[in-house]
Length: 114
Length: 117
Image (cartoon, rainbow over all chains, first blue to last red; front, top):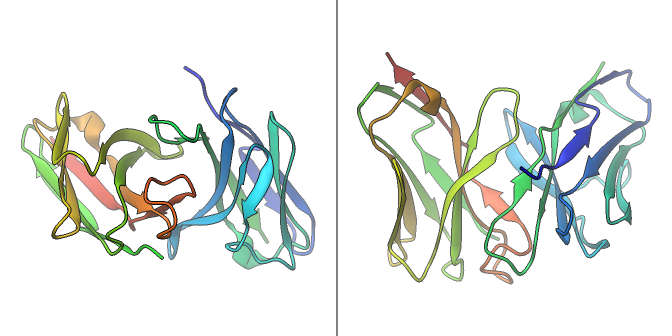
């Protein structure tokens, strides 16, 4: 089965450090989403791309978060500087738009900021 | 934007019984309603979805029903098995500018389904 690959699976870092999370979407998918999952807020959309162009990043704190898609096989989410409140599981999902098969999520990056 | 409410937050059923999870949405322009299953340590996995041109869709032991007038949709799992234990999320398209979900999904808060042996 085709899958969305996220690295690293787990990351523990100290407050103030830079964190970079990576996502390899399914080959042929033209849309990539970044979601954050916490117990309190559930699944929140942070940003998304279509054909590598950023369409909406209104869900991200702009001063510390940035999302890029340098090529069709790689999407990145960067936090600089990281804060304890950024601790969460970050998911990448990809899909083909227009299409009928929905979105496929990766296994996530569990980030802990101490 | 879309608001999705999901109930119950926890559901415990005996193995072999049926489970029903319900969601409501706010945007009448929404026309795509997926359900995701999330197991511990994994990402959400799409298990079934429905578009607004049908009222019900089935796939083996799972089914989804949609009532567009009332703006609610439900997930039905029959003959529940231990492997059905997980957190289930409903979702609807985010924002009124894309009823089909092309611009992302708004998720419910999730239902923790527990199958009792």
